[in-house]
Image: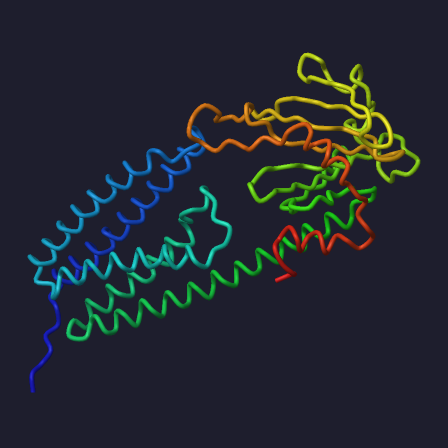
Length: 346
């Protein structure tokens, strides 16, 4: 009966140390890709540098792959090419698994270091331990370890996802339902609510909408200061409704309109966060002023290059949307939250 020989200490050390260093390199390389994406979107509004970063990571990865295979061959590690390929697959599988179980990916969360890194390192350590301890049946048990760790991480990530979605849903529903004053909503066909926020500092509530083309409109309800119908101190954005007192003429272009709302109406154009907006501010009824605002194409922070530019909502469209407003009904916070989050409470 043939006996199974245990690998030498030098072989084990080369396998474990070399494997962990290789896995850490891949994690750092993917972190470099993340940094390239974040900095490109933050400072240039594009990911034009991503192909270069991908080539750099690919070339370095191939070089490191070859170096580790050579080191394992000299240390007499069984199946060195398959071993390094398995470690590479562990890292890539970890990121792919996280990609499909974590919702609402953003540039800043494209590669989550703590979550993905710890999971990948745990899987890699398990694989290396099995390869070092049982070379005869290494790959069978290594695959079992990879599947087990991946399944465990998938379950944890999915539970965290549901908890985050539930917390977001509850926080948004509570914030909307606790707004004490009148909230005005857009009731125009083709426009879907995608966000909502209550400004506790000046007693305003804003609901963001998008149409099928991705154009954005924000409807903000403000309680007038000192209004008898308001339960708050009111907002400085609610009054007065005249160009002389509405805003600094050096910062905001203002034009008085007729035929919009029940009282005075203003057409305002201003810049906010390096992006130009225009809006119609109108008196909805005594004690409430509503503002319907949209970004202008020419005011995009990245206008002039190939980056994203918001589609312009014209002044005529703003006037039409200002005529399609309605007051939110009692108990409508839950329905509005479901429309914003895309479904019922998780």
